[in-house]
Length: 208
Image 1 (cartoon, rainbow, N blue to C red):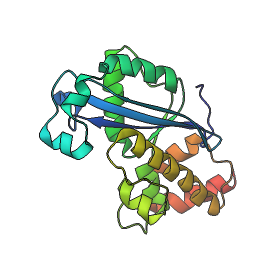
Image 2: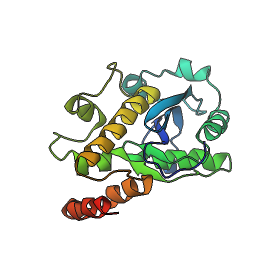
Image 3: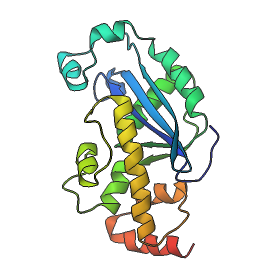
């Protein structure tokens, strides 16, 4: 997938991992992603991956991913090569993107690659565009905005599917405030804008 600045054309992805930080030795155990083009889902990617270490009972309970399942999975490096081919140079979206960015960069570094596009965070965007939500966890936003869900959480593809629906709803909510033809760069800027400066940014986007 080639790079474009269309906010409705990007890769939404999610990792499940052995823990919280690759700098402390944690690895990815599953990746899921949805490719949207012009606001329409056109492709999906999902794979377990063998991190080369056992996962804790907590992670097994939290994700439903067992050590037995990972013993049959391809190594992380093989899966990430396939994901890199799927993602290409596309812009990327994740919920709580600072977490997923760390694992994406760490896993890409192992195969001598780097993310091709920019990265936006649906959690930060939701904080700006849905300030009335009880909190901005993915599950809460899915319920708050009545987004489609099969009730599965903490599995990579299911979370990526819900995040893609959230991302598109956030773009619609922004459009309701006036801006049209919002670019991916605009959304990255929105994620980096303080709540106090949001109205000023929306006004700028309306007159862009």
